[in-house]
Amino acid sequence: ASFWLKSSVPFSLSSHSCPSSAMRGFLCLPSLLVADCPTGCPAKCPTPEEIQTDRVKTTFDMSKFWGTYYEIAYHDNTQPRTWPIKADCMRSVKSPHPDDPSKYKDLFSLNFGAGAGANAICDLEFNVTDKKGIFIGHWQTTLRKDLKTVSNTLVDVGMQSNGTYSWSLEFQCNDDPSKGITFAAVNFYHRNPVISAEELKGME
Image (cartoon, rainbow, N blue to C red; front, side, top):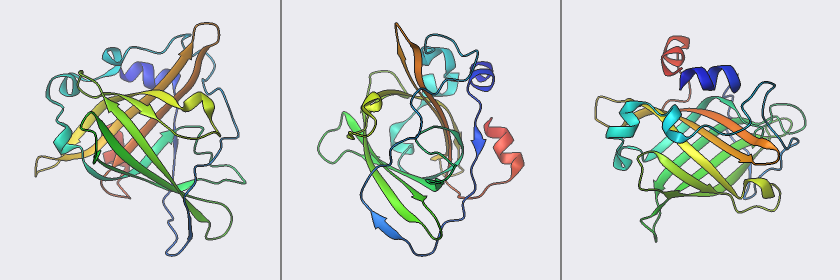
C-alpha cells in the first residue's frame, strides 16, 4: 500500500496561512490540469483492498470519522498551489447525510487568489459502500466533468485518546480502459491545522 502511494503518487506539502477575514463564495474551482498521473504510474487504479491497511479493512467505524479535518499534505490537481489560484488553507468537514444514511457529506473549503484571497466551498457527497472505508464520491460541477464521480478509498486512520480518529489518509483514483489513469490524488487530513514533521512522518 505505502509503496504504491509513495512511488507513484508524490504529494506536496501545503501551508496553512488562513486569512482571518475573506470573501466567501459558494463555488468550486476549475483545475488548470486534466490528467494527473506522474510518469511511471500504473495504467490502472489499484483496488481499494490493495492499498488499505488491515486496521481500516477490519475496524473502521463511520461514527468516529465525523468532524473537522485540515489538509496537511496532498497531491491533487483540483487544488493547484500555483498562480493564479494558489490554493491554501484546505478544510474538510465530514458529517452524516441528513436525508440519506447511505451517504455522507463533506463540506470542503479552501482559500484561493491574491492577497487575503477568497473562500471556495464545495458541497461533496459520498456513497458508503458495504466495504469499510470504500466510498464513491460525487462532485456536482460542470467545471470538471471527469470528476463527477470518483473512487475514494480510506487508506489509514490514526486514533485519538477519546476513541475518534485523529487523522485520515485518503486516495482518489479514476481510470479509463483506453487512457489509463486519468486522475489520482492523495490527501492527508488531520484534526489539527498544524502538526509536527514527526507526526506527519508517522502518517506516511
